[in-house]
Length: 466
Ligand code: TYD
Ligand code: MG
View 1 (cartoon, protein in one colour):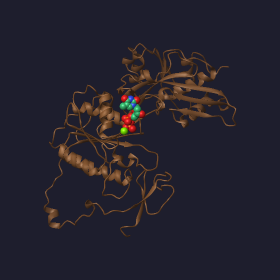
View 2 (cartoon, protein in one colour):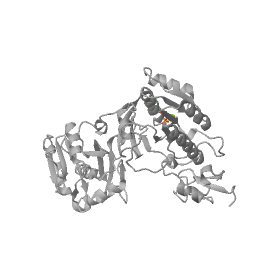
View 3 (cartoon, rainbow, N blue to C red):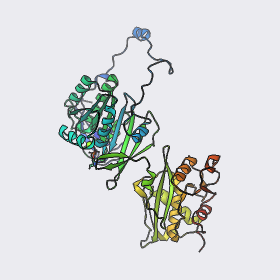
View 4 (cartoon, rainbow, N blue to C red):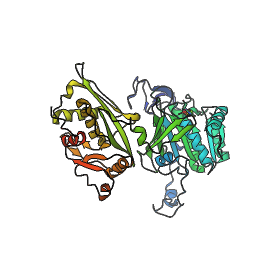
C-alpha cells in the first residue's frame, strides 16, 4: 500500500478504516469518519534487528517486583477533599490525569482553583489554550482574590511552545486546558482531530514522564463532529475523571472512570456558586428532596464507591391513555424500572400494565446499583395506592425476579448514614448479617424476605389488599 493512501479515522473512537463509511464500523457512531493522509511513521516503529551477540550480552534491566527502589512520593493535596478522594488520596506526583466533561460544566474553574491550592506546595504551570491570558487573569482575580500563591500562566495553542516551556520551567504540576485546543503544526490534520489529540497527548506524556511532571489534561466530551472525544486518550493516562452535572442545577459530580492509583466509582460533589466551585461535604442533604414526604416518594441509601448517599425517589403512577403504557425513568435505567414493575405485577397482582409510570431520582443523580430496587418498588406502590411512607424510613434491597429480597453490600455503612441524618426506620433484606454495631445506631431495623413483606413493613398496610 502506498504511503499516501487515505485512511478514514473515526473522530469518536479512533478506529481506522480503509474505506469511507457513513457509520463507523468499530463503534457504530454516525458521520464520524474523517479522511486522513497517513504521515511518516514515528521513529519508534521501525526497529533495527538486534545482532545476536548483543542480545545475549545486553545487561538485564528487569528487577524483582519488590526490589528497593524510589520511595513513593507523598501525594499532593488539591485543595478539595472531594477531588482528593476521587483521585484516591490526592494527586500522585508524575501522574497523568484526564479531566473530561461537557463544555461549560466547570472544568476550567475546577482546575484553576486546584492550581491555586497546588501552587502553595509545588511549582505549577497553567497552560490555557482556550482562553486568553487576559480572560484567565480576570477569572483568577474574581475567584481567588486572596490566593497566597499563584501558578505560572501560559496562554498558548502551539504544542511545540508548550513542550518548550515545560522543558524550561520543569514545574511539578502542569495543567493543560484543553488538550483539544492544542495543535501540532507538523501534523496536517485539523486542531481537535483524533490524530492531533493523540499525538499531542503522547508528546506531553513522554515529556512529563521524563521530567516527572504531574499532568492534568482537560478534554471535552463531544458526541460527534469536529472535536475528538477523550476516548482515544483513556489508555494513555493514569486516571480519567469525568465532571458532570445538570446544566439547570448548580451541583456537579466528579467521578473516576479509570484510576491506576485508587478505586473507581468514588464520587465527589461540588456546587457551582458565583465565586466558583465549593465542595459539598454532606451531599445526602442535596439528594433528599422536600422536607415533607408525599405519596409516591421513598428514600433509599445508594452507595457511590465508599460513600453512602441518601437519595429520594419519586414515582407517579396514573391511568394510561395510550395503547402501551408509558414508562419513563430519570436517574435509573428504564430496563430496571420495567423489571421491577413486572415483579410487582406478578407477585402483588397489581394491574400496572394499565398505568403509566414515571420515576425520577431527586437532584439529578444516576443510581445504577440494584440496591435501589426496593425503594423503586415502594415509591411505585405508594403512588399507585396514594399512600405516604412513614417519615424517617429508608429502604435498601435488591429485588429478585421471584419477588425475593436480596442482601446488598455495605449495608452497615448505609444504615450509619441514615441514622446520622435522623432516619429512624430501615427496611432491609433478611439475612443481611448485620453486626452488633447496627444495633447501636438507634434505627428500627425491619428485615423482610420478599417484596410483599417489605412493602407491608414500609407502608404499614398490605398493598395487595383491595
Ligand atoms: P468553565 O469552568 O469555564 O467550564 P468548562 O471549562 O468546563 O468549559 O465554567 C463555565 C460555567 O460555569 C459558566 O457557564 C459559568 C459558570 N460559573 C459560575 O457559575 N460561577 C463561577 O464563579 C464561574 C467561574 C463559572
Ligand atoms: Mg474551559
